[in-house]
Image (cartoon, rainbow, N blue to C red; front, side, top):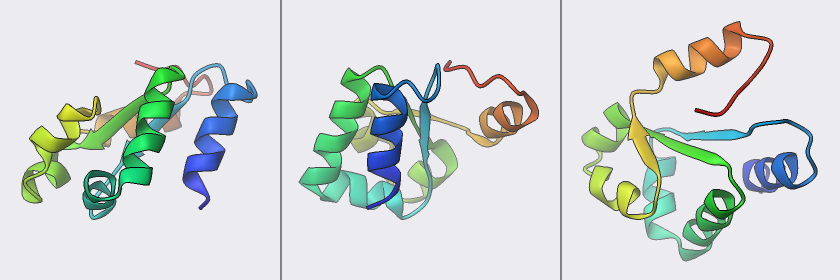
Length: 93
């Protein structure tokens, strides 16, 4: 109810030059299970939003293949998030 509209608007309304969504933990299960979330992710990807899922979480939940099948990049996200937070300029990968 909050993250999806914000992320889509941040991109479509040009609030940021680049927009990245990182999905952690049980939220990954919801993205796989709920059609409306899968549709929202597809819309984000088609809009040029970078979508990542934490590899540790995905592997622990046995969701890596299902997330990748939806076009989501599964990667270790700790460094990704830390680098983005350290820099004033947030750029998509």
